[in-house]
Amino acid sequence: MKLYDLELSGNCYKVRLFAALAGIELELVPVDVMSGAHKKSPLIDLNPWGQMPFLTDDDLVIRDSQAILLYLARQYGGNQWWPDSAAQQAEVMQWLSTAANEAHNGPNIARLVDKFGFTLDKVRALEISAQLLQLIEQHLGQQDWLALNRPTIADCAVYPYIALGWEGGVTLEQYPAIQAWTERITALPGYITMPGIEQPN
Amino acid sequence: MKLYDLELSGNCYKVRLFAALAGIELELVPVDVMSGAHKKSPLIDLNPWGQMPFLTDDDLVIRDSQAILLYLARQYGGNQWWPDSAAQQAEVMQWLSTAANEAHNGPNIARLVDKFGFTLDKVRALEISAQLLQLIEQHLGQQDWLALNRPTIADCAVYPYIALGWEGGVTLEQYPAIQAWTERITALPGYITMPGIEQPN
Image (tube, rainbow over all chains, first blue to last red; front, side, top):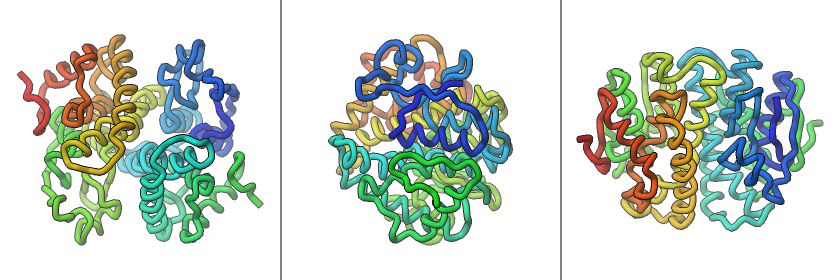
């Protein structure tokens, strides 16, 4: 199983983190994104979307970090990470959409502007980030994990860009419940970090 | 089961459409979004995110249209709409992320600007729309449905903002495979439309 990977991408880190927590072995294939390798043959033939990361498992190719998390959890990780019932799947799915929408449009876009020089609307990214952090703070004031009262792929999907947000000016100083959650995540057995996220103590 | 609903929202229509196709009965609760009812008590107490739509089923409250589709399919719709295996779930999930990300940031944002007067970056929305439509056109040139070679919640999630895109200047003239797909969707038994989408013949 190969993960086509970029070390500095939070979307790639999501998958590396989950695989580490769930004890799933991945072969990392570093992709030279700076030279556009993900948008050229042979990689574009595997993943026409030209986005990072993507996963191959024998003949199967999966794009989109949320879909990869779900695949790994369902195929190799067990129901504790991605459950079976409708109500529980929906509870986790809400956060996979939050990862694809608000966590992307908020802290990820802000980081792309500040750290990588993208020309994008940072004002709007900061507005979305503030709303998102307030909602997550409220949620985590009442429970320890995003869904199901236990670590799931929901936490793996949302955590990276929250933890990397300071690289785009989105800090967690006003959000003690979110800070406590990030500490719970870094304390999980098997946790791994990435550049830009503080090392666990 | 109650869907808190806004007739002109493509995200609400996703759910109404899927329920109609799968024969699932929903009680529609129209919400006065213009007066901000979704952001005030009592609705904000049910759904702190203040977004539309949301669903209640007894004590369960589900936000996010993709999560609602998944819940309805898993609980009431059957595996043909949301499958059981890891590989098949991942195949559908890719498109649920596309609905939450590109279909939102592209044609939905363009429509919000043109039809509802939102101050958002329409140039970027048109760029994202063009990329998205090219990728979907390529995909649908090879298969009739977005995933699993049959109608699934993937189609229900992506179709609304593609079909409504012309209200934001995102038209399908250059995309015959997408046009044919929208015609296949409108021909499905139980199909319903919404204002802004052409009536089926």
